[in-house]
Structures are given as structure tokens and as C-alpha cells.
Image (cartoon, rainbow, N blue to C red; front, side, top):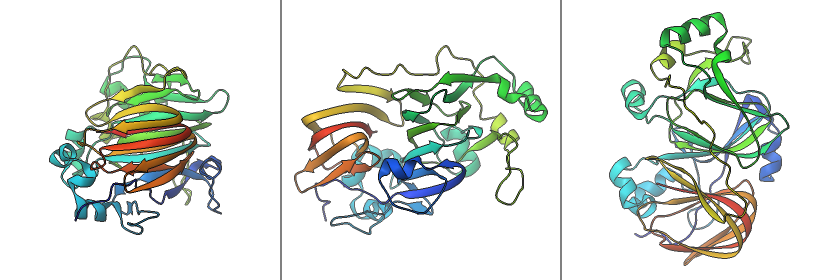
Length: 322
């Protein structure tokens, strides 16, 4: 059986966390009594939170069901060759009403060894930021693994974090091993490897729902951190005049920002699926055997079999493939 040439949209998984806020409900235009929503998982194959098709011919099927049935028609030959039947990305929106913990993710090699999992390289696109909102990415001085551990024990580790202003349109690329944290007041889109492995380093002495200190992973993080200091941790924000611009390109994903005003036909090479994330406005995705509308805060997956599709409307999008 062949998969239809049509876009796929999925039900979001809304995750309530202690640092979450109320912006995701408004941004996505959804009605729910759920509070402190920090994350909306848009497209996920993480066990326990596998995305389910929202509408159309495949409504009710999980992403894993689709992969089992259609394989490379959905994922693409190159993706299947590298990942088999494992979906390689996780797409999220994140609303930080409070600071997130300072954390780091292992690379693929270390994550496979310790957790039988992919590592996590990711990127953030800032959708909205309150005045004085910050992103923490990288180190502002060179430290050794021994100094790192000592500072964590003394409570002075946060002094070593590189701090950056955060504005709509800013892009942060975070390779595995880079220490990072989302500061309060940021609403952003996150594209990452399909991994939920996180090592928490510092958490502002916060307590969980039961009043206990949140777990830290000081020793696990020690071997995962990239201790180098880099010249630049923040990508240059693209100009609004650029209708198509590459924001991030690595072995795990390529992400572009698209500005649509009218019609745009996109031709793919068929080697990978395509994910579209609507940041602003609304757009109709038209394939030969079906279509769907995307409003701000919503995402869709285009199967690799779809070699050409048209975007119609006025919108700002992220487009991601392998």
C-alpha cells in the first residue's frame, strides 16, 4: 500500500511543568483548563508520547503506526537507511514563565552507551520575548571538569554561564554538550533530535510538587559537557526581506525560515520527510491528494513520497528536513 500524497497534522501533547505559563494556549488558539503548560509536543515518537494523526484518512493512527505501514514512503530512503523505523526528530513549542533549569545533553555516542538513546542536538527560534528576556547558552570563561563540579557543589556554577538578550526572530543552535537554559519570558519553537535525555545541572534550589529538591545529574553531566568557550553562541537573526533563509544545518537536521505572501511551490528530493511549523499567519498546504490549513502554533509533516507541494497564504514558517 502506498501513502497518500497529503500533509499530516497531529494532536499536540500539552505538558504542564513548574516553570510553564499560559502563552501556548493563546498562541495555538486552544481551549483547555490545563494550567502551567510549558511545552506543546507537536510531532513526537518519544515512548509514551507518540503523536496521533488529528484529521483525515489516517486519523487516529500514531506516528509509529504510519512508519510501520509506509516506512521510507513517509520517512525517506536516506532517513530509513540511517534510522530504520525510528523517527529522528522531536518538534516542540516552549513557554517559559520562569527560568528553566541549567542543563546539558549528551551526544549520540554517550547517549547510546548510557541510555540506548539518541543524544540531543537542538535549535531554538524565538517567537516572542518579554522585555529583558534572556537565553543562557555556553560558557563565559574556561573551566575544567573539576572546577565545574566544585562550583555546582558551592552553588556558584551559574556565574560561568554566557548570557544573551532574547528577541523575536533570534536563533540559537545548541549542539550536544553545550550548557544552556531558557530564561523566563521566552516563547520559542524547538527542533531537536528525538531524545528525552537531559542532565540537570542547576535548578535555582526549586522544589517539586512534593516539596523535594529536584534531582540534579552533576556526575552524568560532567562527561557530557563541552568545556570550550566559543566566539559566538547566537546566530545572526535573518532579515525580514529574506523570503527563504537557512537558519541551521547539521547532520541531524536542516531548518529554513520561509516567508509566504501568496503562493510558493516547493520541490523536494524525496530523500527525507519535511516538517512545517507555522510561526505567524496562516497557510494552506496543498498536495496532489489532499491539503490542510496551518495557523500560528501548528505543525504538519509532509511524507517523503510527496515530491512537490504548494503553500498558499500569508505566513512565516519554519521548514525542517534531514
